[in-house]
Image (cartoon, rainbow over all chains, first blue to last red; front, side):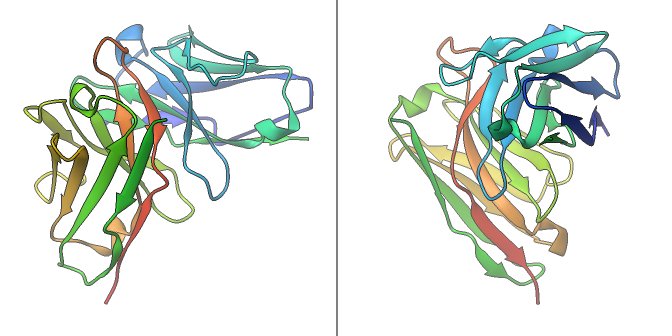
Length: 109
Length: 121
């Protein structure tokens, strides 16, 4: 059973920078895992932020970026805003199925 | 404007069945993969299944394999998820989402608002 692991929680100050990572139990995350990132606020459906490692959707704020970092997929928020407080999920492809990470609760404090 | 509207959720007894629907509009439905994901109360997202544009290719999470079936009707711009042999741990909000296709890349972009399935006696 494939497990995708994220930090359970992170805290960042307004204006700061934070990186959320996404690791795979099967080995290093590569571009072939087609990492996607989503933001979800309480009571709302998920909102897509990043696809195929680093590509932004038209609505994705410029302060969000995606990359591969040390064998993991990474989502970096630069110049964090109070409205960025939310749960963040990665999604990885495993040649036929997709698996979500467990989610990272980001607190802006 | 892309819209995805799920329906069909409700209360069902353990062992029962339910069919969820997701009506799509605002894009060329037949060219896109479509996904179902779920989220149990207070927990994270779980990918459930996907289907390609012409319905010839489907995959499932291990937790639902053999119990759930995804299908689509491109004439009706609708994707379905048939839920059989339901268990209490299938209780969740079920979301449909649009996937890639037509050169758009490996993505999941637009999501519906979800439909709640509650499995309880």
